[in-house]
Amino acid sequence: MAGSGRDERAWVRRAQAGSASDFEALFRAHWAPAYRAAYLVVRDAAAAEDIAQEGFLAAIRALDRFDRRRPFGPWLHRIVVNRAIDWARARSLRPEAEAVDVSAPERTEPDDELLAELGRLSPEHRAVIVLRYLLEYTPGEIAELLELPRGTVNSRLRRGLDTLKERL
Amino acid sequence: MRFRAPGEQEAQERAWAVVRRAYAEREPVAWPRRHARPLAAAALVAAVAAAALSPPGRSVVHSLREAVGVQEAEPALFSLPTRGDLLVTSRKGLWLVHRDGSKRLLGHYGDATFSPHGLFIAATRANQLVALDPKGNVRWTLARPAPRDPVWTGTRTDTRITYVSGGRLRMVAGDGTGDHVIARRTLPPSDVASIRHRAGQSAVLAAGRVVFRGTGRFDQVVRSPDGRWLLVTWPTADQWVFVRPGTPRRIVGASRISVQFGGFPHVQGWCCAG
Image 1 (cartoon, rainbow over the protein chains, first blue to last red):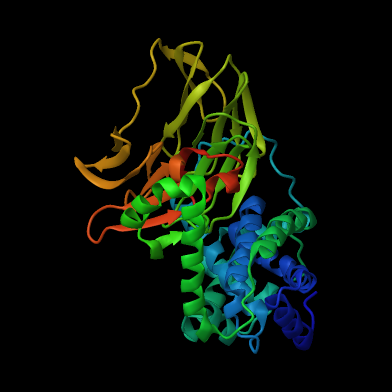
Image 2 (cartoon, chains in turn red, orange):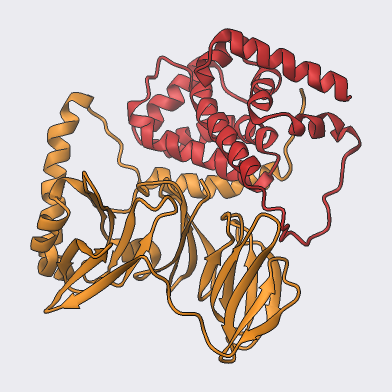
């Protein structure tokens, strides 16, 4: 779980000063939401791991410039979700349907229907739904994270949810 | 929404191992940013001085100053200048290098190639052709004597890997099936840009003109997936140099490559992912 705002600011401050344990606290607090968000957008565990990992590597590179007055989570999630959308778009343009994957199909969980349908939405619709309902950002915050007009966020949320409702 | 992604804990530990190392290698800035520029300049001077004093650096530093420009030489490989992942081999094995400079050791393999869209890799080891995913997980293997020079080509729906084994050119489908001999000779080397060695100097020629030159030997020149950059590998200087021909020409160097890969690496491919 993410720490309180005060904890987090302290972790960031001490991580900037070189404290590995505080950086680890920051990582542990934010890994799961970042990985889950990436997974729900790209629907590929290996890609999600890379994307979340790259988000943290980008965070390390920018750590010294990070404004400690701002929360760390949204900043990280912006990087991760934007990368996930890029990856999903690229994948949809270049599907490697030759399926080198000759391993057994993955087991389907009984309650996976919703997630499967979520995976059929466009990356843009998937991303706003993940940010809203998994990471619990407000539409205004999502608009800021993805640098979109708030109306666009609202319409993507509405269309995405309508599509899910129809399919389920 | 209560949801856990597959392999969450294992993924976290793998990622933490990488992220922790990156954090450990970072040098914290504990002073106001307004001081950063002069100090960075001082660090560059120190780095250049150190390079000049090192045995490989001494022989090429003059040429490097001319060719790369001190301001553009990075003390290590921090990132690639354009989209795509690099596949390289060194004494330690096969590495996948991402655009942000992070890299993953995939295992002990010889030659390697990306699939056409960069989502898989075919690599060789003693008596096997192996298909891997970018995590290094083996998807399939094919036992053949001393395979080498794999090339993975194809379309969205049909890909093939050609490779050489037993002095014959062979082909196998992207899913590892249907392996057969297609010729008794090997493919000619490809293309694009070339290296000329003359009087202790090397030069890279593209479209018939010299786009980069330096002291010592260049080993390889590899074109980026978008076709705009050339990666020149320069073992004499322990450098990778990224050259963007055209106007304006851009040249970005990365130093101390051997340390980062456990020996100077050989580039196997630069592909489209990322």
